[in-house]
Length: 602
Ligand SMILES: *[C@@H]1O[C@H](CO)[C@@H](O)[C@H](O)[C@H]1NC(C)=O
Ligand SMILES: *[C@@H]1O[C@H](CO)[C@@H](O)[C@H](O)[C@H]1NC(C)=O
Image 1 (tube, rainbow, N blue to C red):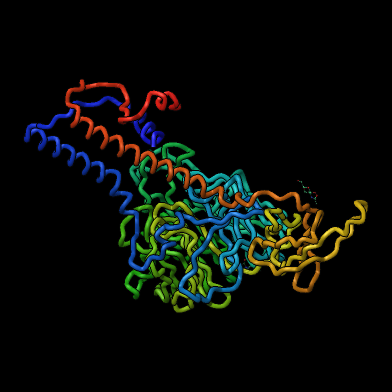
Image 2: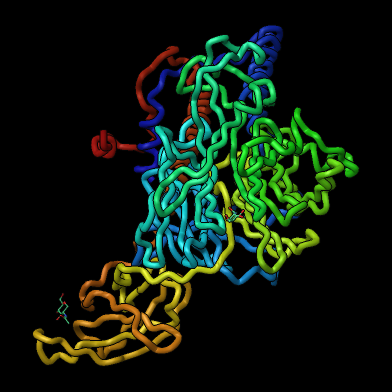
C-alpha cells in the first residue's frame, strides 16, 4: 500500500494550480471552441491520412486485423533467423504443393532476405542479407536449377547492384554485372531458353526536359535492357528507351527531379523484359503505362500497348489497354501477354484495385482484349511492385508486391489459395512487402552442417535449405573412448516442419548427435557432437515478445499513475482551498510516516 501511494505521490511533484470553481461562461466557451478547432485540425492533418490507409472489410480474420502483429513471425531455437507466420485461406485451400520463393522486407521484417517457404508456409531456406535482395526465384541455366536474385543498394526506386546465381548447395556460381560502365538494376533478371540473361538498367543521361516543365539541361533516367551471355559476360543486345520514347510520354510527375545526375527524372521506369521464341522482346514501362514489343534484331518498336502511344483498339472497353503503373509483362504464347496491373501508385484512392491480367492481342488488326482478370477477394491495392506467374498446371500465381500476399487462381480466375504474410488491414503501410513471389520445384542440399540446440530435455534440429530430409536419427556415444567415437541409434523421428524437437531419453547421458535421413534411409548430414549439458533455458523463444509486454506494462503503469495523480490532486484541491498556487511538494497520504518516506528511491 505504502509503496503504491508513495510512488504516485512522487509523480505528483508538478506545480499545482489553484482550484478555480467559477470560470466565466464566455471564456469557457471560447476556450472550448479553440480546443475543438485545434483537435479537429490535428485530427485532419495527422490522423485522417493514416485512417484513409486502413482497408477494413467485414470478412477480415483476426490475423488480417493485426491481432498477431503487422507481420507475425516465428523464431527458432536451433536457428537465428525468423520466418513469417502465414495465414492461408479459404479453409482447405488447394495450394500448389511446390515451394514459394519470395524476399520479404520492410519495417516489420526483422531479417530481410531471400526466402523459400513450403506450400503450408513453413520455412525451407532463408539468408539474412545486408544488401537488398529482389526478384528471388528459381531459374534453369544449362539444364540445371539455380536460385537467382538481384542484390545491391536500392535508391530512389531502382537499384545499383549485380545478379546472383546459387546452385543446389547454396553456393554462388555466377555473378552477372551489366555490360559497359553501368549498374545492374533490381527489377528483372530473366534467363532465356538460350541461356542468356535479360537484365534491366537505369542510366542517368543529360536530356532536355522542357516538354515536361523541367530544365533544358536536365537529367533523365533512361530505361535500358541488355541481353548478356551468362557464360562469357558478352553483351548480345542492348536497347534504350530514349531512342523511341520522349520524356513527355510519361505519366510520372516531374516534381523536383531532373536537376541532378543522381536524381534524374524517372520517366520510363522499366520493370520487366521478356523474349519470345520468335526473338521479340517485351518491355514494361511503369511510368509510361505501356508495354512495348521490340524487334530482336533491329531494336525497332513493333507495337505499343497502353499509355500515350497505345496503338490498340480495345473491345473490352479499356480493360486491356488502360492499365496503370503495371509490372511484369510476359509473353504467354505468340499472341497473348500477362501483366500485373497495379492501377495505383502511392495514392490512397480506395476506388483503385490491382489485378493480374491475361490479354489477347490481334496484332495485324491492333486489337487487344482482356481475357481474364485475377482479382483478390479483398480487392487489394498494390501501390507498387507485384508479379504474375502462369504455372505449368495452367493455374496463375499473383504476388501482390506492396501488399504482403500471394494468391493462386484457376485459369478462369477463381481463387484457389490465398496466402497472407502480413495483416491485410495495414497493407497500405507497406510494413512487409515482397517485390515478387514465385512458385517452383527446388532440391537443396546445403554444404553447411545441420543446426542443433539442446534446450531443457530436448534437442532441436533444423537444416536451413535441406529439402530432402524426411527424418532425424538420434545417436548416442557408446561411451568407449574419445579417439574414434562410436555412436548407436537411440531414436528416429519424422521431420516436423523447419525445426524438429526430439526429446532426449534417459539413456543419453553424455555425448550424442543427430543425423538427417532422406526418403531412402541415407544419411545426408550429421550435426556436430552435442552434449546433454549444453542445455540452455527454453525461455529464449519468447525474447521477441517480451519487449512488447514490458512496454505495455510500463504504459499501463504510467496511465494508472497519471489518472491517480489527476484525481487525487483534484480532490485535494477541493478540500484544501487555502494552499498557495504553486507548491513543489508531494502529498502524503494520511497515516504515511516519515520513515516510509525516507525509504523512497530517489
Ligand atoms: C534462341 O536462339 C534461337 C536460335 O538462335 C532463336 O531463333 C530464338 O529466337 C532464341 N530464343 C530466345 C528466347 O532468345
Ligand atoms: C552435467 O552437469 C552436472 C553439473 O552441472 C554434473 O553433475 C553432471 O555429471 C553432468 N552430466 C554429464 C553427463 O556430464
